[in-house]
Length: 304
Image 1 (cartoon, helix red, strand yellow):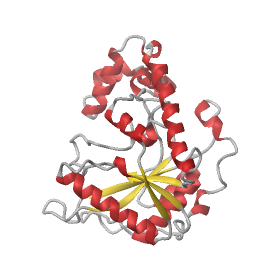
Image 2 (tube, one colour; image 1 turned 60 degrees about the vertical axis):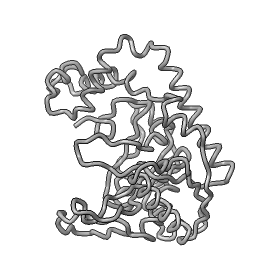
Image 3 (cartoon, rainbow, N blue to C red; image 1 turned 135 degrees about the vertical axis):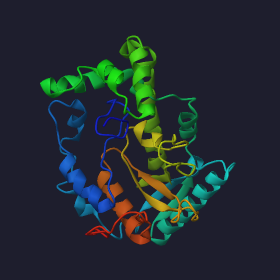
Image 4 (cartoon, rainbow, N blue to C red; image 1 turned 45 degrees about the vertical axis):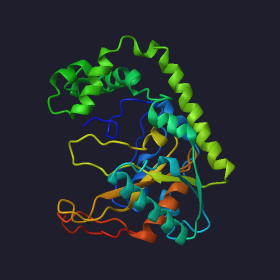
């Protein structure tokens, strides 16, 4: 029901909200239905006049041709484990596919990303905002709501994901979180990080940055996912789109292999560009595969 990537964000300054779909075309259709200005949500006001008539107009199968993409090499694993080596190999093959599709790929390093990833430059603010945001949500439900506030929800939420519940409990334990001096400092660092990423793109005249979404193979459901690069978008506020980038070698427990996600990140309001690049990548590679347990679905090669 609730989580960092779920329906209800627990932070206005650190969450990235967007559709999860099978194909890029599905995501474009969903964005057409999702975007818009909400007079009660100031975070949407900056988007006035910046959304296209339809995102499906950017579903170009040749979308990578002539593009300039920056491959952020320091977002790969350090190679100290087989999981790192597999993901790095899959990601580099994805880069080769981008080049074959007509794009110019420039390898680069963004040192500030290392500082954010390691925690030396802490940008996370969700804990400071969680109680306020969640309480606003419960109040908005009015008499329809089962809970009046986050404290009531946590007390009764036996079926909540343990990691989400732990985050809620930690937030509730904080005293005057919005007055904590670290809160504005981290918000300022988010701006600094966003500006650094845009500078990196501007310096090489890039359409987008490209990197692996997770430095090691994903683990089974229920176990904590580690070494993720999703902070590039969530900590900067810049838009990103993740697409299938290939698979690890098959095993007995993963007959198709383990999927590896790759990500394109762009400037503010660059969703049309990201859709064009991601759709071009998807149509050039066809890496998406449904699990063996998934029944055949209509429109399983949804294209425009």
